[in-house]
Amino acid sequence: MTYTQTIKYIYNVFPMFQQIGNDAYKKGLKNSILINKYLNYPCTKYKTIHIAGTNGKGSTAHLLASILQESGYKVGLYTSPHILDLRERIKINGIPINKNFVIDFIARYNFFFESINSSFFELTTGMAFYYFAKKAVNIAIIEVGLGGKLDCTNIITPVLSIITNISYDHTNILGNTLTKISKEKAGIIKPNIPVIIGEAKGIVKKFFLEKKHTINNTKFVFAQEENIILFSKLLPSGYWKLDTKKYPNLINKLGGYAQIKNATTTLCAINILKQNILNIPSAAVYKGFFHVVKNTGIEGRWQILQYNPKIILDTGHNIAGIKYVVQQLKTEKYNKLHIIFGMVRDKNIMPIIKILPKDAIFYFTQANIPRALNAKILMNYANTFNLKGTCYFTVAEAFTYAKYYALKEDVIFIGGSTFVVAEALLTFRNST
Image: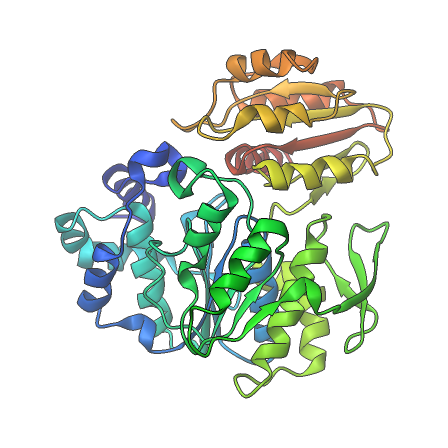
């Protein structure tokens, strides 16, 4: 099979949560344990860092990968979902997994994965662990797919666990209270392995303080209480200037208001990793933050595609993520704000629509996946909150019309779903 044929086979045979939702979700580690054994325990052959959380885990993972790469390590990075190509999920020092490796892996092991009725995520996790072992990485940063306790990545024994934050998302699977969601995410915490809680307050903070007393010899660090960042400023370039005691004048090239908290969590992780785990020079921290996009290829985090008109996209897709988006849009200067917006149907839709800017011109749309919320239904929901606009049944059409109507002094924002962002990004690149 060619690479294209291989990817088509994977999507057709192995159910993908991002595409179809709950029907693809497999609860439990049974298959992960079988896969790990069948592939000769690849994830035991290198150090790992495990990252869970509702938001920010992808950004934190990429920042850490960039810093460790600048420290001279061969760094594996496993994240999800991808934006344009499956290979984005599995990288070593920013380079996606080789196409031929994907082809050969599937040709060699497809019968086994079919025999255990593997999910898409179980398959890609096994492939990532195997790839990192074959390529002899020094350390791999592993992002949880969903939850934590029963996520198929939770067979690793990391040197550090990180839980970025807890908010409402996937409540039909993880639970409809912050305590229930916290319990699922906390499943990655293990005895004798330090854990960082990136952001916790109220009932979430109470949960983790109680959890601290139930796990033996595990150091809990609450990043927001470490007072790491003394000063922060969003520069006209869209980058963050940060001052810390150890790293004054630190430039973070990941834009977006959420990146302050992600930077705090990342710096907290660096402090722990430097304690007899890894050698991380100060220069690597500066370079890692500054070159994070170049080093890792991360996209979709308050990403500016062009100016005049300014086009911004962001993958924030739940209530916590959209709050940051709305907050930052208020700081943008424009004549008119155009918003290309689409969602998936299994999100808690109404609270998100309720906080969207009332003064924007909306282009309601839907991604080309079964899980997408119909654009007409989305527009009808939005109309109840006096949001005005037109529905377009493809992202490409919505993008075309937004660019046609927008003047140089306007801003076009694209978001609501990773899949809307992905299709918009592809449309933009095909047109330039």
